[in-house]
Amino acid sequence: MASPVILLDLNMPQLDGMLVLNRLLQIDPDVDVAMLTADYNPESAVQAIKKGACDYLVKPITAERIRNASAGWSKKHDGANIAHGAGGPPSFDRI
Image (tube, rainbow, N blue to C red; front, side, top):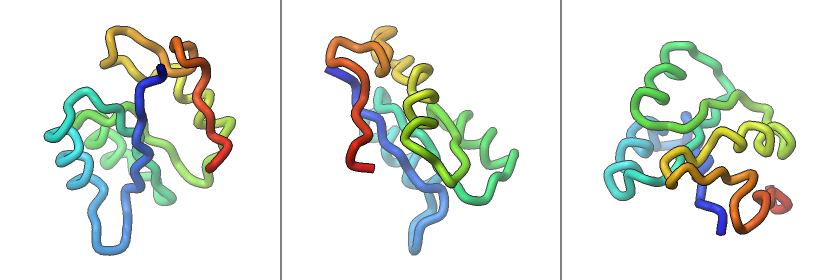
């Protein structure tokens, strides 16, 4: 079964994506979190990756871009690769 990945927006109403990232990784250090943003900022990209995000994607984002990016995710899950895991490729039909 494919490992879960959380797609987390950096800027949300009343929430700071970096703080949510910190909390998610406190709860489950093995979860993969990919940050999304409409406002690319190199400093926040570096900060997100250093904090443990598996990727930093700039919107607008397509399902194809997520599929391509996901090939490098799940590094924390015993070397499993989401795109080629036992559960098959990830499904982004509901995005």
